[in-house]
Amino acid sequence: MAFETQKNGEPPVAAVDWRDVSTFTVGIVERAEGRGRKQAVLGPNAVRVPRREGRERVYAPCAFFRSGAEGIRPGEWVLYEDREVRRVLCRMTQLPDEGGERRYEVRDGAGRELGRIARIPASGKLARHSWRVEQPDRPEILSRNRWAAFARGEVSIRSTGRLIGEAVGSAVALALDDTPEVDRSLIWRSGKETVMESSGRDFTITAKWLDVRLAFAVAVLGDD
Image: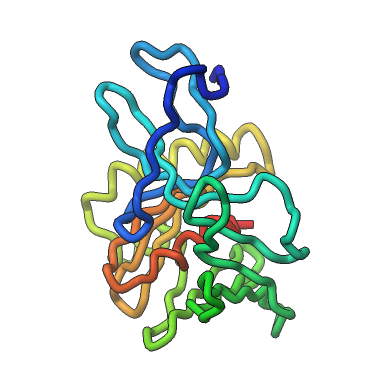
């Protein structure tokens, strides 16, 4: 895929209010390659919302990263509400590990705690790590591999087509490389309720009660 920076005279894609976001990704692509555009246009690194702008596919920013690490401590990530990176939306800070878990605290711009995120280590030879999200006054949210959830009847039949496509892609990757870097598709559940779904850094929130900033934090940390 070819890329170019923002064209002279072409305005950046307008930012959207983070409070209204339910589907998002993390990246620098602002205008996608497609009909009438031979090269994708890049913008600042940001949390972005895929949408249509006329005939174009664009990725509207809703939260921004600072371009450099000035003012940010090691083990800390900061998202801002504005392009000028003046208003802090949320701040993620790594906490000391506990019981093998890698732990993070998420706070808003005023320093109020929004919740915590934990990377839970693999528990078996074939198992991979999972995640736990804790939001105050809500039951904990646990990630689960989409295929495992489907096998247990926790994913609707409407997801079957997407699952098959992902399985084919994963099988091809496995055939080419014994240790492929393949984005995982995860279901994030609180009890029996699906709270959000993700594939790599592409996220869809399904529970209205989830604090969007916690979902942003999960995406920023990545599934590593």
